[in-house]
Amino acid sequence: MKNLEVQKLSVEELTEKLAEYKKQHADLKMAHFVTPLENPLQIRKVRRTVAKLATELTKRENQ
Image (cartoon, rainbow, N blue to C red; front, side, top):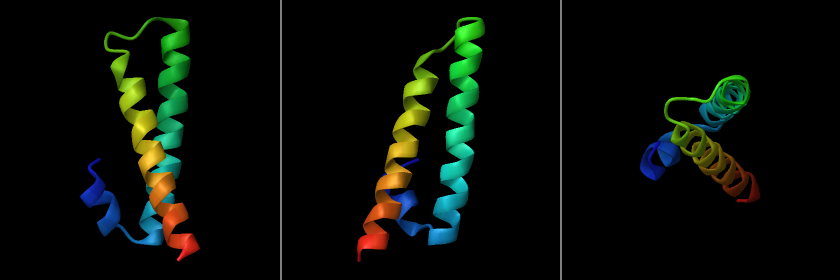
């Protein structure tokens, strides 16, 4: 997700997406632990998306 896409989301959408991406990250990590993924860089991409969503959510809560 790009930063502009994240900024356009509402708070409810941010929390939904954050939960969705956290679950996806956990699933990818578990799958990679069991058998190596074909493209392990997916884990990094999802982790960074989680960070973007969490940062935007925190930024909005502090305003």
